Image (cartoon, rainbow, N blue to C red; front, top):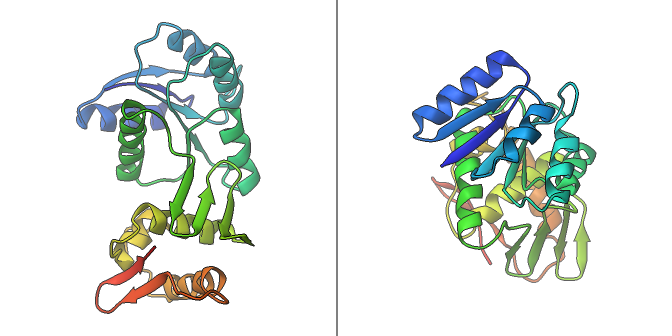
Length: 223
C-alpha cells in the first residue's frame, strides 16, 4: 500500500515513516500541507495520513483542496485537538477518520489499513448500525430507534469500539488500549464507571438490554 504522510514534526514523521515501512507499506513524507498537496496531485496513493496543524497550509486546508479537486483518496487526520467540535471540523473538511495524539502506533496502522480495505470494497463507512442502535460518525450523533442519546466524548469512543466489534466479547485490556490508549492497567474502575454510564443511556427505558457483561471475558454489544 502507498501512503502519503503529511507531518511537519520531523521526529513524529520519522517514527511514522519507519513504523509504516516496517509494516510493509511504501511511504512518502511531505513536510507540510503545501508540499502534501503537491505530492497528492501526482496520484497513486492509497491513503493520506495528515497532521491537522501545520505551517503554510494546515491539514484542513489541504484536505478541502484535495476534495474540491475530486480526489477521493481516504484521509486519516492526526491531531492533538480532540474535542468533538475539532473532530467534526476535520470530518466535514473531507477526512474519513480522525485519530487524536498521542496515539498507539498499532492503532494508527490498523486504521490506515482499514481505510484502504474500505476503499477497495466501495466506500468508507460513516454510519454504524447494530440492531436499532445507530451511530453517525460525521454528525457525532447516536440514536436508538427514534430516541437521540447524548454521549460524552469518551462514551462515544467506547460505544464506537463496541459497535465495530458487535457480537464479539471485548476485554478490559482491549478497551484500555483502544479507547483509553493505556498500555498498562491503571488499577482504577474507569472502565466500570463508563460502562455503567453507557449502559444507562443506551439500555435504560428500552425493552431489551444490548450491552452485556460477559463473565470472565469482558463486555459484548448484541443486536
